[in-house]
Structures are given as C-alpha cells and as structure tokens.
Image (cartoon, rainbow, N blue to C red; front, top):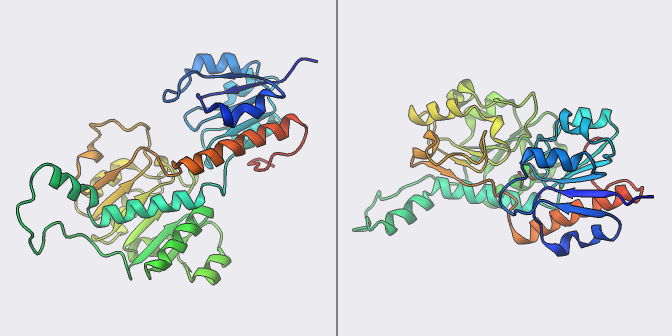
Amino acid sequence: MSKPYIYITRKLPEEVIAPLFEIADVGMWEKEEDPVPRDILKKEASRATALYTMLTEDIDKELFDLAENLKVVANLAVGYDNIDIDYATKKGVYVCNTPDVLSDTTADLVFALLMATARRVTEGAEYIKQGKWKHWSPLLMVGHDIHHKTIGIVGMGRIGEKVALRATGFEMDILYHNRRRNIEVEEGIGASFTSFDELLSTSDFIVCMAPLTSETENMFDNRAFQLMKSSAIFINAARGGVVNEEALFSALKNKEIAGAGLDVFKDEPISADHPLLAFKNVLALPHIGSATIETRYKMMELVTRNILNVLKGDSPETIVND
Ligand code: DGY
C-alpha cells in the first residue's frame, strides 16, 4: 500500500513537522513568508491525504473536488473562515483548527492594542523619534483612561473570556454580546450580557472577537459605529470581514469614535496607502494576535498531532466539523 501524502502550505521548522515524515511522504511549500500559489496548491491537493494549511489559503469546493484522497484539512489558526466547512463535511473530510493554545496570547495582544491605542503609545514613540518633543506640557499626548471604564466584548468565546479576565485587572465594567449567554463568564468574572446595540452605546472600548460567518459579516456597519460614544475606541482582533471598513473610515473621519486598534483587515495584507492607515488615531498591526514563539510552536504541534491522529485512524484532538 502506498504511503499517505501530506502537503504543508508554508515552510515550517523541521522539528515540528518531523513526526509526519515517520508515517507519510511530505511535501512543503518552500517559502516562509509568501503563500503557496494557487496552481501549485491545486496540483498538490489532488494527491494529498492531508493538507496542513494557513489562513491565507482558500480551501474551497474547487479544491475539495480535486482532492479525491483527502481525509483532513488542519488549519494553523483557530479561525477557519478560509475553509468551506459544509462542503468538507459533505465530502467526509475532517477540518481541524487550533483552539485554546492561543487564547491567552491573543487576549494579551488585544490588551496591547487597546492600551496602545488609548494611551497613544506608538504616536508618542514616533513623536520622540521625529525630534518633535520640545517640552513637557500638561495636555501633551493626552489619551483615554482604561481603568474603571466599560469594555464591551462582541463574541464571548475562549479568547473573549480571556480578554474579560484581563479587564478585571483594570477594574473595568465588562459587557458582552454573544450568540449564546456565557454563564461561566457572568458568574466567574461578573460580565453582563447585553444586546448588541446597548453594548455599542454604553462601552468605552468595543472589542470585536466574533468569528467571520455569514451572520457576522459587516456587522460593524455605519449604524453600529453611529451608536458608539464619540469617545469610544474600537478594537478588532478577530477577522476584518466582520467590519465594514468604509463605515469605520467614515466614523473616524466624522469623529464619531475616538480611535481604532486593528490587527485584522478585510484584505490582508492591507496596503500601506489604505485610507484607514492615514489616521493618527488608528493603530494597525499585521495580524499577529497569536504570534509569540511559544504559542506558534504549540499551534504547529497541535496541527501535526491532528494530522497524525487522522492518518492513524484516530479522531483528531480539535475538530471543527464533527
Ligand atoms: C487565528 O488563529 O485564527 C488567528 O487569527 C491567527 O493567529
């Protein structure tokens, strides 16, 4: 019987993928930064038993139809909006993601974005480097307090919970909106469930942690931004598609909100001349929510284990479409 074939869509460190070589032939895209071109992915998928994917690849119907031997798509991310889950299920292909291992790390970055946006950290650092700092002055670079303010978290999943936990350290009032009530976070952390509109109109910090689905796409639209306080700061570390970027642009331009901290964008990478990046009160990062050395290794190891499990006939640890 021929060996299974695993295709890895990005160059990854040898040591995390080494176990795969013991049971399969392994092919890997040769570049660390650039995604695999679609034509190569299609060719590789057509012979693959397992695909080890990044969020930069569209794993769609066309690809599933080509991949007749495919048993598992294991994505190096907790989000899986790049994969056609319904079609994978129809084809009997497991889809796996990397939950839990990245929750604390991503929540840390949410707070880094929130604090840096509220306290104008990057703006202040640039100000010094550009030689603009002449004197201390009472209202130089004044920002917004974080402690004792109200944080509204939209999407109370595993990462949302960790964001809420961090907010308790800043003695914040915590509101959340989610498809389902999360009693653990209400009883354990003291967060209050509210409607989307009430959260928007009463929060000082609005943190989007909702996954991108057909229901959440563009949920932050003109109406949503207009409901926010003019002193509100909007943070998005989930997916760019949850936000209508034209609406966010108008809200910033018309001073309907005070600033935004963004780790994700509708089209990634966002171009350097994108109008959103021209605002001083927008802090933008290149989708690095889970990017710490410890966490990225844990994610890669989990993807490796998920693939090994499926190829050995066991259930994967973290299945999306069970
Ligand atoms: C995820 O895991 O979905 C993140 O966005 C990537 O770090």
